[in-house]
Length: 284
Image (tube, rainbow, N blue to C red; front, side, top):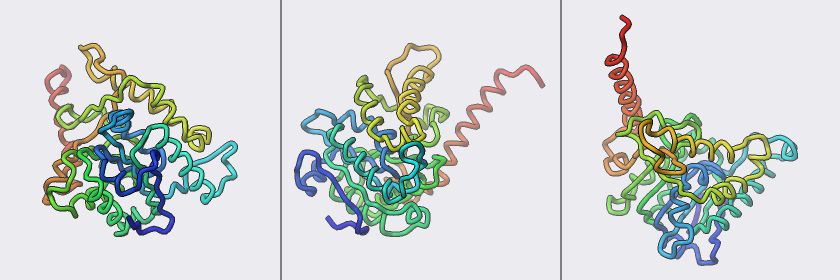
């Protein structure tokens, strides 16, 4: 497969050729940066881990430059960080037994300026992989590059014939929790009981967690909190949860506007909050 950026690269941990690795994909995730896959798509990683008939494909869209750094990483240049973060991503792919991991190596600016190359690369990967479930960022994320990646994913999906599109497209949380969504708009993803695997996958990215951002502790804590605080009158049904917006309607219907779709979820939350307040308040 030809990718548009000369620095694009891939790893197939079990040594299969890339074409076969893509063709066996069942679960696919597209993240903006190295370590986003492990935060947003552990549900898919866990579903495929150790399974002979389920394979996870992880795609990192950007080159990994520009991340905050401190301590022993403070003097690292952007070029150094790109190499280091790809090495970390490869290690996560090996530990997580991914079917394949691809880094498209586009600069963040290319996503935020709607360059066509990332969309073309994603469309080619989707056409080759044909996943049944696709994870990416959500449309209400507070990180510009994350939202830009989601829009690129939607554009890539919509460029494919209907019978080649994933049946399920989920917009998952990273830079904004989605616990506030109404139950009708929220998809709860059980992250499983293997917290050791989760911790190892997140801890692999030492340039981030030891470089000034404890994504490992924050992510595991958020998953535990979601599981406990999801229901006030029931015992916990899962050890950890991540939440997602179901973006499948946007993948199936090209006439739907992504912005209107996302803002409708905010309207639903507002209506739910208003109903509760109006029903319970005594002060006028």
